[in-house]
Image (cartoon, rainbow, N blue to C red; front, side):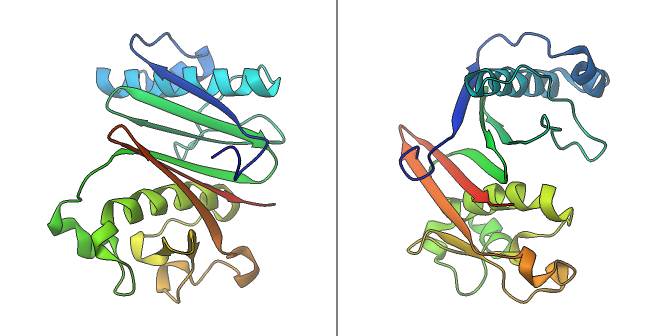
Length: 196
């Protein structure tokens, strides 16, 4: 992935979670223990990634639950089954998703995939859309469902079909999003980038 997207700094955390910065800890004070652990692992991974970028700053959670990255930094955090991964760079917006590889529950496929998408790769499409959504949200602040993006895995891109949920996003804020995916050892990692 680094060859396709240079300038990225990564962090990974698993196992015992250490407390996050007090500003971040306040956001999870009422969360269940599993959510607290996920959150702390995510912030541990974010601290590692930021340190590799040369930035030492907390990553609090905003009112919409999205991470608030330091000024000028783009980043994304993902976690699944006790593993958290974070990626940061300078400028733009990033989206990252970690998932287990394998087939998606057939009942979920119509919710995730549009008619033009390859349903035999539904798990890959799901992960790509999760990453693409995370990249676009800080730029647009629009919440929409899975049918608001169309993923072509052969072209490694997510595009914006005409859809009522994304109609409020200005056309010049809807460029194609490049999708980088890595599948290894039973895991699937998806990354996308939206320039400023």
